[in-house]
Image (cartoon, rainbow, N blue to C red; front, top):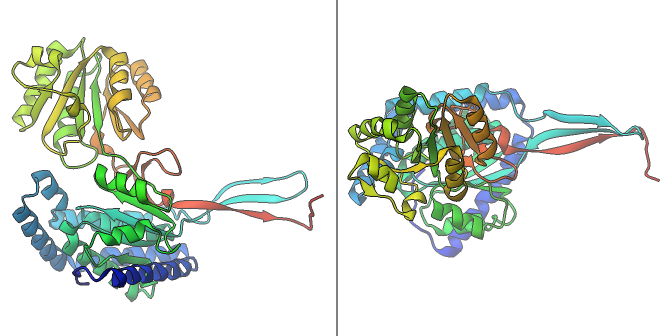
Length: 428
């Protein structure tokens, strides 16, 4: 598939509507497949990605060269980059999705009414899902295979920076579907980088799209939520926090905070703010700060933090609201668990927040009171990932409260219907 230059508006509109029609037809074909058919298709996709590895990596090199020329930040370059290890990880993720229990046709509940009606709630696909994302080419695969596992057709619109890589990956997936005599249009990638294509998707493609999933920064998600005429499974930015409680084990605190911030700074599960219990701050904060600065992290702190650490950049209100996606960490010294909860209530985006403590009661109080999609005790916020949850992959981390929350895997891409069986009942 070739990345296209923007066509005239009328032509683009018809192109997008045609993608919607073909996706709807493919979704009906998917409904006729068995769980074994979908598993076979997914394993073929994993093999196709491995076979197309050289072409995919060459496409990624071209995207990377263009991104460097544009001056993309190191964290964004890291999101974009593929190598043999990461590509193998993508293929393994596909195989993991293939081995998941099939989410369709599950009997979620069943009961019999006094009049004898037998009622069952059964899981079914959502239908056609539009995924709009930015510069992470692995999302092309994650989204495509999760939709296939859950019996949904997917229309994918990736970012311009990853266009060549995404098209190479999509070509491999579609080739695998064709070789297995599956509906090829179950996975379609928008071939143009024209932003007008996003507008057409948000309009619902004349009823062809059932759900939109945005995966990207605040501006993308806010646009989708404001303009979409179909339901949205969205997430705000990953403004993640780690709270080091007074009863934290010092070694765990240093190791976890360092990993939570610096393992990969450009992922949405990266900790952006460290909350330090005032009772432990004088002794433990210098140890944590030393590990972070030696790893190349810039620290910004409130007044109490700077009183302990000395000459670091003062933190402003903007810092508490910023997803850096970079080697920068804001630090606030808080008055125990109540202070941490108050900070989170004001500043957390509801993505992932963690506590480090050996006090079981404090940990349970934190889990009960923090209203985030993922709440963690004594582990890194970077575990906020569908693969780490055993989902094989994810489309994103949903921070809303309706339909899906947390990692969005295959099971979260289903809905349900009711099967009502009678023996001749009529309603009086």
